[in-house]
Image 1 (tube, rainbow, N blue to C red):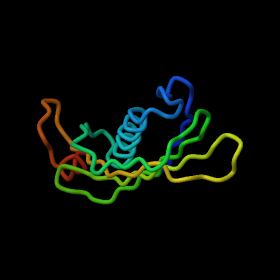
Image 2: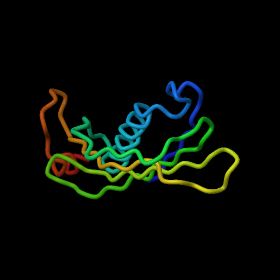
Image 3: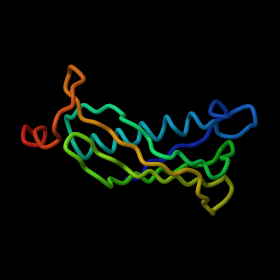
Image 4: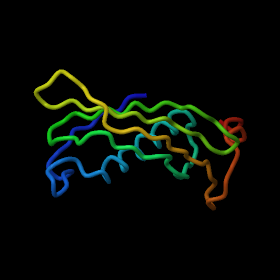
Length: 123
C-alpha cells in the first residue's frame, strides 16, 4: 500500500529539514491504516518498531512516499515493512529516506490481545 504526504515548514527541525518525529508519526499512522484495510473492524495498538534507520535528510516541500507492505501475520499481531522515499519539489528523482518494520497487535476494548483469526470469523 502506498501513502504520500508533503513536508511543510511546520515539520522542520532546527536544521531546516524534516524532524524525525514526524517520520515516526507518519509511519505509525500509515501502518495502522494498512492494518485496518487488511483487518477491518479490528482495534490495533502499536507494539513496536524495529531498527529505525534514517538514511538521508528530507527538505521542505519534498513529497514523501511510504510503501507499506505486510510481511508477517501472527496469532494476534501483524508486521509491516515500511520503506520511505522522497522527491524534492522540482526534481523527478526519488531517494531513499527511511526503513523500518512495525508490529501492531489486535486488542479488545479492554486492551487485551485477541486473535486475528477470531476477528476474521466475526466479520
